[in-house]
Image (cartoon, rainbow, N blue to C red):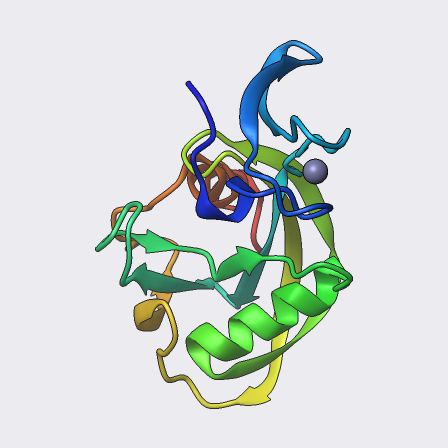
Length: 167
Ligand SMILES: [Zn+2]
């Protein structure tokens, strides 16, 4: 398995065409002319677990992977962006709602997207529900009537919420 992404086809330091070489145990794009080696960074996603009484906010995925299933609002964190800000931004983009972060719920690795996932518990503070961006739909679901869920990280978080005791 090699890297053929156009972004790494040419050396960003000198412009020479890269070649794939074994470096630190993995094939990586490397420059035969200067000493540049491309080390891709892991992807990190922020996920918002937004609840309102016995309801959780879910978005229907409009794109692959897991298109058509429901997931927690989430997205990749931009370089330099605080993960909490990314969660707030993604919820706004996908559902139209404004949220405030309550606490971090945990850190997962999602094998489907190969992303490190930072999960935040959040509450709504404004906005009006309207799906957009990558979301085909956005709705509040009663905990007793949940749809088919996308992503292991979503299923795990929802399962933990369901096993919590509610007054
Ligand atoms: Zn180079």
